[in-house]
Image 1: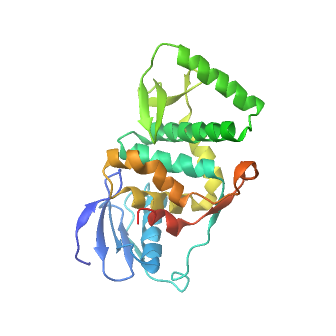
Image 2: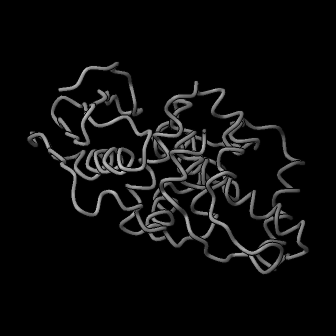
Image 3: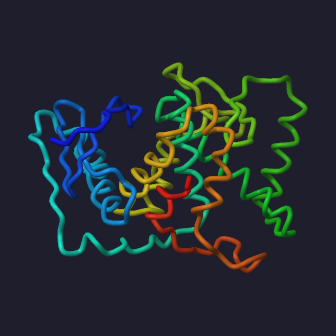
Length: 252
């Protein structure tokens, strides 16, 4: 086991110890992991694999430690993820919301709201207003005329929230608590089997910053790693390439 400082990494209570070697290990029962400090491409690849194992096997009670060694493919940069920007922003906003202390179900609906609001604002700037978006705009204007409700500030947006049946908050969706299950399915469909990998990279990016600072600068960080799409209307709804190694390095 390497030396180095140990610090909290995940909201679920994981700790991480840095190794000097390009190896990693997940101690599932002890809720800790070891890996190289992700300051080089090879080290980042190993570290993201370790984080991915944490997410994929988190529910495996009593699982033995998973040891990860370098593979022939590890020095190569992981292939980009073909995805459009909305689910990327949804996932990133979810990670930020969890760092602010909101439970996963609340965070998912807040993330979906941020992405939807951002998309509508862009459509308005581009003059791309579809019937469904016009209806959403009318609902938004109507909501502004209603008595003030509780709001959550996330990545520059003030999000109206309502209590769900279990008492936890959800973003408001047409006067009802938004569905966390629907938001999770949306993100899972967009990322496929690369979801754990992308989320782990986002958590690496978010971890060093204090929660309030992360919320303040979070959208600018997203702009550094979001997929590149054509400018203007041509890029509306288009898929681009999300490069995982750029996510964790966006703060540099």
